[in-house]
Amino acid sequence: MSLPHAILTALLEKPSSGLELTRRFDRSIGYFWSATHQQIYRELGKLEAEGHIRALPSEQPARGQKKSYEVLPAGRAELARWTAASQDPKPHRDPLLLRLRAAAVVGTDGLEADLRRHLELHKRQLADYEKIEQRDFPPGKDAPHDRIQHLVLRAGIDLETFWTQWLTHALEEFAELPESGTA
Image (cartoon, rainbow, N blue to C red; front, side, top):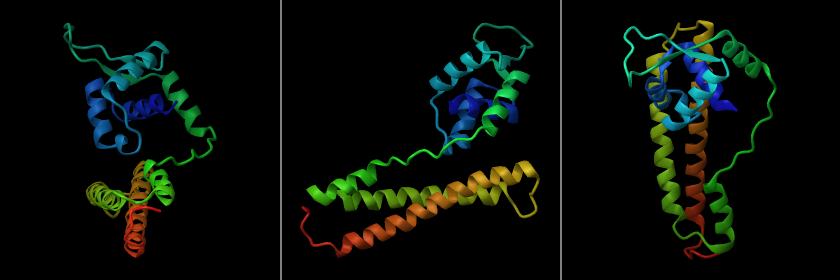
């Protein structure tokens, strides 16, 4: 149920076309809730059919012209309802952790290199988030909506910090394992 709510959020921030939404997902919301352009367009159609959004009238009607959408009162009410509803945390599912568990019984061949690769990916993502923080949240930018958006970014920074620390520790553990690649 979260993709329609992510789209409603983005459209309340700024009415947009499907293409613009896709680009915005790639630059912001997509860091924590990804969607393909097909998923976004399909969801736009559903939201419009449900009366949560509408296509803005275009100045020059033309076939194939991109539609821009805005949120209607029913869409705002749905987003407010969803935001206020209680939700339990979702269990974390990570193939790398499952592969490590399996390595305990079948051997560690190939895993150390992948742990290093994951560490580099998380370091890069952390650096990207820190650049965004410096650019978008300078000292003194403390309007309520800025503070809440900064909280979301801080969650990303803290998660990437966790992963870089944990992967560093895991690689230290791997360095102490016997040379054999089997358990």
